[in-house]
Length: 227
Image (cartoon, rainbow, N blue to C red; front, side, top):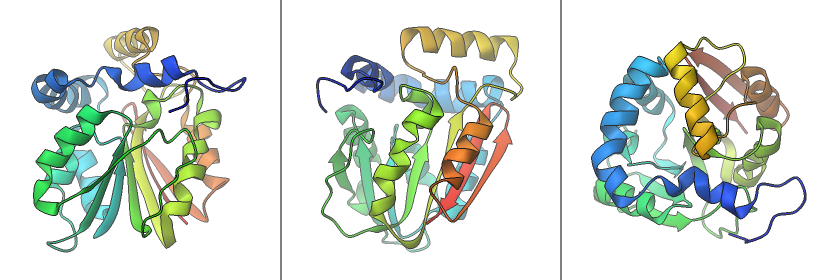
């Protein structure tokens, strides 16, 4: 990751803040019960089982996952074949290590990269790319950070699909407590979604992909796009 940023680009400190919370201890003790257990169900109103259903529907046997968290969905989803090619990509080495251990039966490839920058990855392309709960942790508004789609699209085979979910604001329904927590996370730099809207996500996908769809579940925008 470069240590300086051009004018209008996120600083190295902003990029770092969005993933720094994922320490070995927070991944092992807090992420699954707090984020996937409590926040998804009671605050964001997009239950974890809905996100797992998304993986079951779209994941391929030749899959790259970006922003891997604890590897929860990759460890539980139904791959179309028992021995898929699985690759993990994240800026945070703790997340990469944790998710790799959790999915060790698939012998995953690992790539530590900042997807806000062009990706230098000389490997066979993928049929699907997952980006779950990634965009709302990235600095900038959606029209700016949607550059990640430009960076990952060359990694897709023809007809390949990108899918994922991100927490948005704008017109989506949010409880008082959901808004308070989002505000806190934005102040701390864990989230950067104050200006993220469903319409901006739809437009970013339409500009880059032949087909796309966005659906709203609580505070989450679930999306897929086909190259």
